[in-house]
Image (cartoon, rainbow, N blue to C red):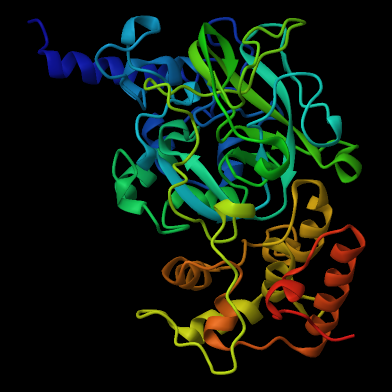
Length: 433
């Protein structure tokens, strides 16, 4: 008896899942998943369970056969679209259909590949090239390492399918259920804890951090290969400490796309491709900037909170007890990282990322073996008050003496580089000598 359409779809799904365990997939030399029940891989699991071999993991499940299957496509292009006959599009195409697709996160470290592609460009003429691998399935992209801050994830481009399902369950298919709530989306914690892609040092996302120096724009390009770097795994190199550049392994998609700068050549040559994304409306591939974002740089960031003689009244629903606990819980050598990070983060620039690293690393997994510090109430308070690096002021939290000294020193380092620290702008987080 001929199976029904529903049964045929189920059988096809099972076949695709079983095939993910094949040692080679369509000629691509990719790491197979461990040979166990495919259904087990549709639930979040410790990173080690996904990577028992030494080969690099690019996504979870780690095979193009899974991601290219229409059954597991994360995007279906609207009527009138172009590219691949408008078939369902895989996550690594980095497609944006509406602004709610961007999920707001806060933490780090993460990589910024928005400007990557050409061999030269960006701050200090850094090498931001994206060079194709010999098989053309991936591009090795040089990207900025951003130590900490506000960043955004395209819900359609999460390269870990169990985490994608978890995030859709919380935020909705279009991400609208998590709007204006930093770190509400489950994918944020996976990136902050460096567990989204097994073996990666950090993950790629979008942020506004380098817009004051590198700009923001859009160039519409026709169908061609481009690197889909959103949530791709990234790795530090021997030069990262000096250059602040990491290398990300981005899957390559062939379709129409937009480059994140104006008046660019779509074809780069020399086996180079752009790190890009696709918006069918051709209106750009960045979050809408009609409002402000706490801790974002420049005019896109919410303002600093003015100093006043009377205590602030925090917004309704904010627990100042929890806010102050979050500021003081994470510390390294007695220095409370929440305060040092605030003192530097909201006045930082793209070319002083090493100072942000020094100020904020105490909040990340680099200084905390188990997980990144919980700053959920801090983020909630700043979002409610629409201010940047301000939760300690809102709640009257006070740093200890070693932290005050560290803040003072960080302010001096910013002044030495021609940066006006927060202390000089609103008289807060000045520290003591």
